[in-house]
Image (cartoon, rainbow, N blue to C red):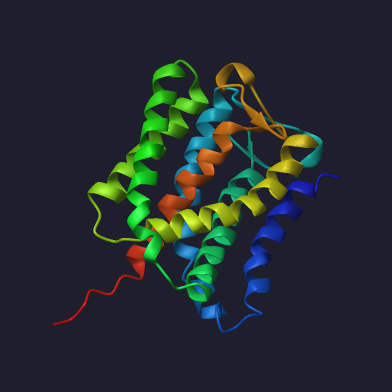
Length: 226
């Protein structure tokens, strides 16, 4: 029973290698390029996980973990930050290769501006609650930076990858939140849930993937030569 959380992580890490059976659109060399940005995101959000656990926003069900904790956070949660981003970034690369058309980019700024508005609304109405304040605070900063201070244009592909990654998200969090392996203090959330998954988790995934996608694109950016 205490291996369930670990098994979820292992399945997420193995997922890109299943995609790699379609070698035309994803190969092992491509998979390697997602390790560093995934690790960077996991490192940053490890701090977020520790902070929220210290303030009892997260609570973990010990019988479903290995019992190895860092500041009350199971090591599986820290690995989960990596494995979910790793799987999602490889799905993003796979979709980019299989469907290279980027004509939808012209709509991405409107979507981003709408999301910025949503972030502002949640920060205003839920500023007394820890989880939405942190999640929407991080997300709005990332959206503003990527759309208005960054020259790389990838947001249409990002939104496509994010929507596809929700399949992995709902499978993983569906197990985590319904056993439950992890529980949330409702007083520190906006108390809106989908299949027992807090609304904030969706936007936390978006923030993690946006940072990971930006780092991936930046690391692989090759300026045009004259």
